[in-house]
Image 1: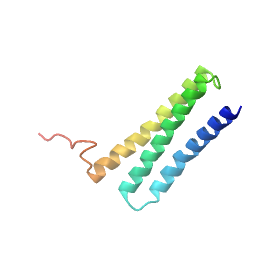
Image 2: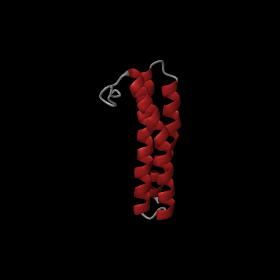
Image 3: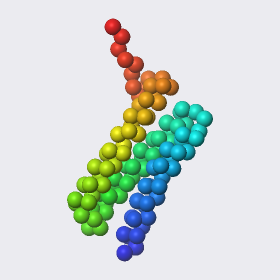
Image 4: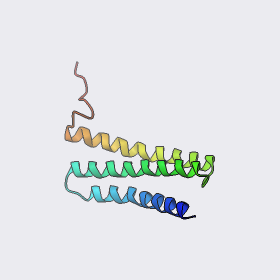
Length: 103
């Protein structure tokens, strides 16, 4: 029972961290800081994904529930990843996304 409680608490902490990091990053004065906090939010989503996979393996949730949650995580990562990519282009981070080819 303690293991299930600990895993549940970790999932809750990670879930709260997602919007908290987005909000904190948005409140910063620099695009680089904002991007950093978006990466943190995305990392928290990946943590939830890992915790759900573990919960399924331990028999705390069904495979169908785990799959449903993991699909929702993928859908939540997509706009975050798009925003991160947009900010990378805005600050001119050539190591992440090369500039478009010229003719």
